[in-house]
Image (cartoon, rainbow, N blue to C red):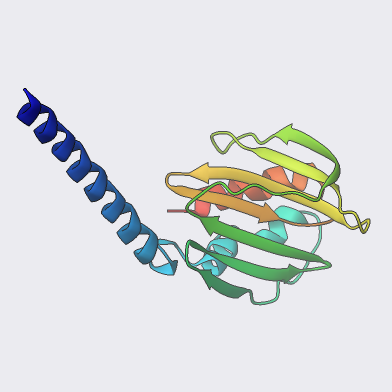
Length: 159
């Protein structure tokens, strides 16, 4: 009886060890290699058209940054700075005064958060998920309806 308990415990311990080893391997190997190029996603999403549908606005080339658990691209489009983050987890955020949260439609769920920072700067962020990728789209100064449109374009541009 005791041997059975020890064997069961050993099996559970081996399973936990294997799961931890797998999680560590995923964490170690998850970087940019597992994500699409965030700047390419922004290009495919036609950011300028989504944000400024009635104007001709230029989009500067984006700058991609790689992190251990994702990638981001920051691009200037007209007078707005657009930052797209693609990560493996849904990270929290803070520092938004008087946040207003609205549903993000057309992307399988998500939210748009607007407000201001403690310094009085505008915040406009959309958060949603496509498969294993969590998407954070930040466009301070953009309207919620512009974020809705751009989020749907980004969702469609993701693999």
